[in-house]
Image (tube, rainbow, N blue to C red; front, side, top):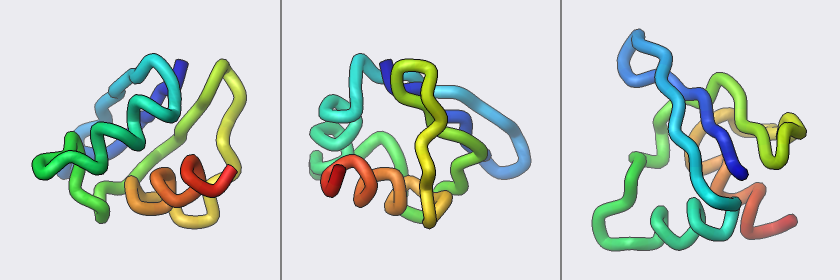
Length: 67
C-alpha cells in the first residue's frame, strides 16, 4: 500500500493507494488526483518511508516511475 501524507493549504491530509502503480496511473489521467506542486510530508510504501529528493507530488511520481 502507498500512503501519502501531504499538505492541502496548511491542513495535513492522507491519501492511500493500492500501490505505486495505481498512483502513477491516476496521475497520468487528464484530471489527476493532485497538482504536481502539492507538498508531501511523507510517503510510505508497504510501511517503508520513500527517500524522496523532491518532496512534491511530481517528485513522488518521478521516483515511482524510475524505481
